[in-house]
Length: 77
Image (cartoon, rainbow, N blue to C red):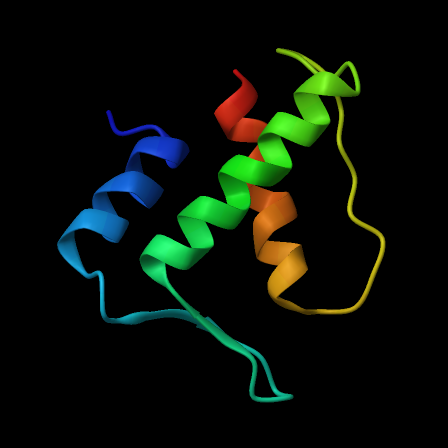
């Protein structure tokens, strides 16, 4: 079974030049860029006290940040 953060890392290695996500506003990120931003957000969440079993919510518009918030908690545990 592949874990969600493992999928993100595998995609970043397999497709470094491919687009991972694009918004309706035209913002897009490649897989390695998304993985790096997710890791950065995971570190911030961890420092703020989030850990395994913690609940993290996203309240905002459909944007690249929503994808980051989707993947980041899985990096914490």
